[in-house]
Length: 281
Ligand code: THG
Image 1 (spheres, rainbow, N blue to C red):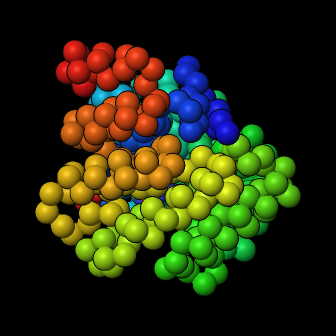
Image 2 (image 1 turned 45 degrees about the horizontal axis):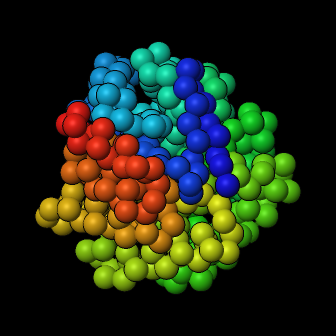
Image 3 (image 1 turned 30 degrees about the vertical axis):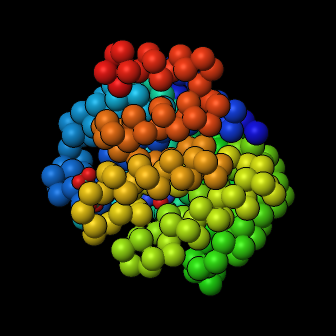
């Protein structure tokens, strides 16, 4: 299936046939104290420069997350969305658990954004899906339900199925739901990556929808994060992952994605790979 998105000037399609889709993660205050402080003062110059740098590095979409304790999301999220939309033309990924902030962001966001996210929890399905339908956008479905995050792949797949059913009942087609089977911290649970990879495989083969993950979650607390992230990502790509939230400024990640697209038959005549290698990725 194809998930069609748009920004103020550009369209992007997430699909299993085409090359991998990169969502830039850097506009997120977690672990970035300078950004957190700027956001708490509604100061947008860092947001602006992170947006431009990620676009320059080849991000297809830009995630915008301003969730941090001292920030009033309902005012700062729409401000950040407007700021990013002024300096980029790609579709945006609106990353918030706050329903009011989401509505305020959708009000000002150009094109057809990707809402990040709905979960399988009843309250989330009931509040987020009607907004997605009303604004005609697409949504990431996280495989969490009222019991929390399941530790086996089968149950994550079942939650994905329930999210798709609920979306359909709200008038949101399956192609506009991108499932995130959740990459957890592998330093905390050694099965974390395996469970996610197995869930990707199940969701791809039985539901056929597009799949994304937050690639940098997997390596929290470990050395060589970039190495772990890109190893995980290429395994995910082989299992059917076709999109991820990651740091597009990580050149080793960009190289690994280009190689995996080539090896998985998504780069006809290696045009993308050869072009990138010539132009310094
Ligand atoms: N799924 C979906 N959305 C998500 C996540 C997900 N949004 C948020 C997060 N997870 C993805 N974004 C990030 C952003 C930054 C980091 C990890 C995931 C990160 N930051 C460094 C840190 O905290 O140590 C700080 C910056 C740096 O040094 O590079 O790791 O899973 N749908």
